[in-house]
Image (cartoon, rainbow, N blue to C red):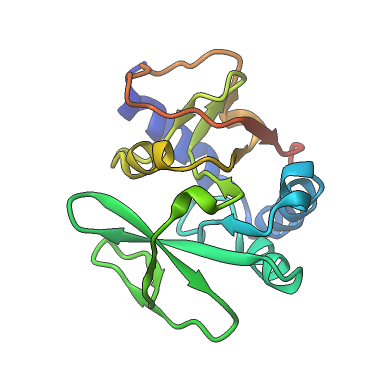
Length: 182
């Protein structure tokens, strides 16, 4: 299966989730991620503000802020790059031209100091291979980081070995959390 077919399949699996399942998953994600030693040891975390079919991260973001962690969210930069903006409860957001919400603020420079990174993905393998959304943004950004790289997925989007082609530029995560069936 090529990457585009794998992406469509994974998106379809995520789109099938009901609103009730998404609420339950938001709680499961928060419990599972915050139980990780890498999270507990982290003072700074890079998270994502979930959009469309992505697994919901809003509760995890709120929890990180309540725990006093320094929280960064991504913003698309020129030349298909990512920057990260430090957020707090008063951060304002704007819609990017691709339709996603992004924080308004100054980019954070030294990403190598971020302790924990929740890496978005449509599907993951047992070895940490990640099927992203196709833009390569995280594949270009992750090599600049040193923090723990964690992926979260549903059982239908977790495979023992990748069903998609792995490119040499594809970045892996250190650990994959597979949520319980909804």
